Length: 357
Image 1 (cartoon, rainbow, N blue to C red):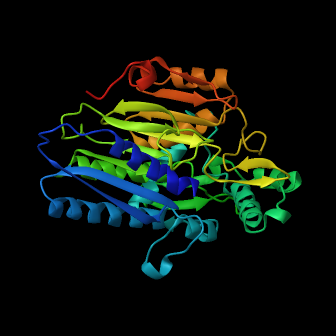
Image 2: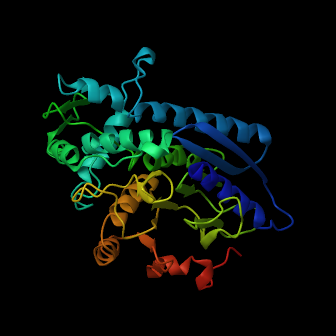
């Protein structure tokens, strides 16, 4: 429900921002509920509803295809699609040829592993699958919810070496040098997919748009109604997500992404304690320094990766990491309710005087 409501929050926020008279284009919107385990909202300015619907159909089709490619838990071999699930079943036996889009995602993740200081590791699937199973069991029967045994997590962590993910760019194949290695691209896949979709829209007849995919927001050109920017809300982790007052900040942006990693989207409770899905690769437990970290940068896949990495570091490390990157800004929300921002984030934040006029 939290992920669904995050998309609703964006829709409500945008609806609350009044449109000036004399808009030259028409605004349309639609929702998709069948990809990436979240609601995806598309809002765009187009010359006609027919044009918007054409673009929306292309967006939906692309998300559906990418969802299947990047899926860790389902096979689509009967459709001729090699997914992450299929790689986890077959790639330790022999090199497996994959779709160029899946290959590009894995290449992107492996090439940025060092940049993210090892915090975002798509080869951590063996550990994350244990947490997934215990979380699903805990959600199904909260009275019996348990934590994964540390012995099992430690044993699984012995099979998370990114160097055992062998990518052959000439043959477009993937091979696991460790038979027990498993992939999980959840930290990056949704943002990466959103960026691919956005690039398609930017090169087409509807470049003025905003996409919200759970905690991933990608804006295109400025709204075609006289405003200079889109308004994007940063959600209050403890808020009633159906209320317009339940965001802690509003950012006025265009042609960039805002991606948030937080502890309030996928979690379960054990003995009254919340355990979310963002797992520290050093402790093998959910990180506890922040409620959320939001990244502002152009590329949504890059932002998705960075938001996870920044969330998993202590604040001083996280701040130094973000400050070392060009064109990247961040907002940190702490468990005590306080918030810190980079200077660039302040420049687009409503609380610091930014507007969309």
